[in-house]
Image 1 (cartoon, rainbow, N blue to C red):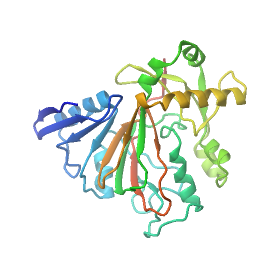
Image 2 (cartoon, rainbow, N blue to C red):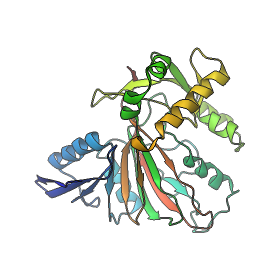
Image 3 (cartoon, rainbow, N blue to C red):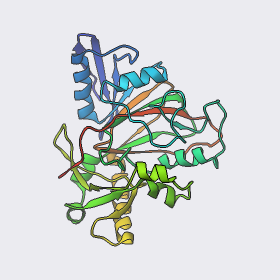
Length: 298
């Protein structure tokens, strides 16, 4: 695929598409430095076109990660202590290593919750106003697997068979953080956690606020019900939509290198992590961009 070189007041940006469905590598950004308005707008435009951006060789601290995130909006504060960083509260630790540097066993409560990223989902869909996007920094990356796969939900919606399009049109799915806990026998939520994140209904087809395009909007690890359907039938529909979304023609799979930072749009993608050796350290730090408006149904 051909390179696209764009000149900004801060230098040149080189954009290399990574897959036919979505994804691009962007060179010429140093996340330790502030972005001027022109460069930031160009990054936003590239993001809108490619949905997932990879910024390699970003030798950033957690605080620099948070500050770069502020170019796109306020960083979200995760509502549970279990995964939130103790030192930089905007950091969500997608890690099998604790904050003292010790590898956690697979049956550790934090490891078990983090491992659920190995199923298709989109971040913060259980919030009344879901997040805009996420930025994930690869600090210690795995070699036995641990790739992050992204799927283009614009393309998924456009390719849906007509019968499935009719099934989802005008319907909503329930997004419930507690469903994650219930289906995987995790620690039950506390009353405070439950009150902080009550379930919400979100449309199955949404309009992107920037591009105006339609996309399928599901987050299977949180989708307990579908509006107007019996619980079992609703979950069967979500499973069918999930399987359709994961087909190779819609997916870019990112093989991590140390200090990659990946930015993705949660409004038109889903993602999952491939399995890796539980004895291999994997330390990934994520920020999540607070959403600025409720989901608009198509």
